Amino acid sequence: MKGLAPLLKKELKEQFKTYRWLIVGGIFLLFGITTPLMFKYLPEILEFAGEQLTIIEIPPPTAVQSLSEYASTIGQIGILVAVLVAMGSIANELRHGTAIMTMSKPVSRLAFVSAKFIAMSLTFLGSMVLASIFCFAYTVWLIESADIQAFIGLNLLLGLFLVFCLAITLLFSSFFKSSLAAGGLALAVIVAQAGLAVLPRFGDYMPGKLLGWGNNLLTGNGESYWWALAITIGVICFCIYFAQRTLKHKDL
Amino acid sequence: MTSIKIDNLSKHYGKIIALDKLNLEVPDNIVFGFLGPNGAGKTTTVKLLTGFSRPTSGDAWVADEKVGDGNYLLNAKTGLLPDVPAFYNWMTGREFLYFVGELYDIPSGELKSRVGELLEMVELIEAGRRRIGGYSRGMRQRLGIAQALINRPRVLFMDEPTSALDPIGRREVLELILRLRESATIFMSTHILSDVERVCDMVGIINQGKLLTVSSVEALRHKYTHSAFEMEFIEDARPFAESLNQIPWLTEPKIVIEGGTPILRVSAVDIDYARRELPRLISESGLTLTRYELSQPSLEEIFINIMESENNR
Picture 1 (tube, one colour):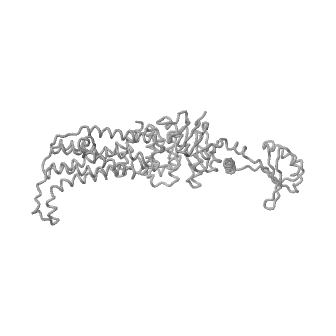
Picture 2: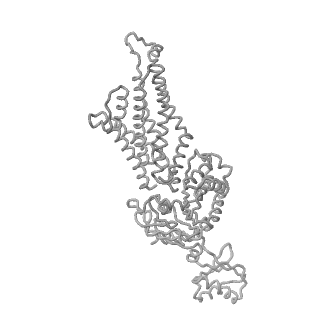
């Protein structure tokens, strides 16, 4: 992977200089902090809003509810943020001509794609770590203590799923000079696999099942989906390989 | 020694033939002008030679490296200035050159001095500290040249290097190209004929994907010149013009009136012979010569001539 180190350095710098760290981190942190707050103060919020709670009895919130809601929100919002961040990563460079400037130097296409993938993954995983620390701390502080091991397991699976979304989007970004086309197709594939993930048996092999597995860890349900994990990692590797192959065979 | 060797290189886009069996050899340390109208196949050739496009058939070697997928040695020995150089606008000019230098694995101490040297050469020392996003077109072009030279390339590809520059910017870039000739072979695609006349040692003319001719600028002039001599005399030159009709190495002597002045115009079959012998005939005629000129066609006239004869085929 000739040229990976300087390319990765440049990509990481770009994440900072174009405020992607701040934007992704900010969004994740917002949900990491507000989810436990919402659960804790929902009755008060409703009361302030003038709602009568005499009809509906809201049970006291649990740590599992708070952490599981956080995972669900990050799972949904994270997909959108991943697609938005990754859809232009290669497409924009192809359109603007910076890809030609960079690849006319002695660098491999694999290094070019990998540097982008690693930098974006680090941005997302770093933001997730930050958000999950705040979410866990607030949950324990405001609601009740929780199983930290299960929460770490949940975050690892959630993180892997978001990295899968980044890889899919990156692959489509190498196909087109239009970032919108890349984003649209990536979103369609991610939504399609999520639809397939709810199917019995077949769904157990879908990357989307990782989210369900993460939830199972929290609730103590022992069901795990190792095939989905293996397939997700396989698809990520496939996407990186084909993205660089596409660039190699493409007339730039 | 040959810097670029192209062997039957073709590129088809479906039914469209962008480049048709191009054969070309470019010697070391010259400025080679690749001349042609828009859409002739110039950029396609540059893209094929730099590995950014795959040929339909044929082969090419640049700086002794075969052009093809993933040949890092090729990239290490060449430099490229695309027609519209693009940069990461969030970087400063200096930062971009450091980034490019790191891609070439230039050791940090050497890179620091090289970046300073290049920024000075392209007159961007001060601007190098500013973000590229705020650069003018000329500054971007100069930064593009600097990045293409950072590895001291053996072959430098420049695609339309002056097309978007103002006259001062153009002059600066052309002077830079002339200086670079000492250390590199420059393959410059362009449609600006005056640039070719000014800096190129050799020229290849391409149209509709076909190479029409390859030659030095001088040899082209020689080949396509009409060898027209123009003379003005104090006396009536009609009898002398008639006598020239008998001379086998001269053709079509005639008197034309331009701005009220009669001019004797005659073409030569053998220009070198006519250069030597015509003054003797004038001397023997006893006429008083006030102007004597060998009018050579400009490269523009030659280019149009070649294009027209190609279109008439």
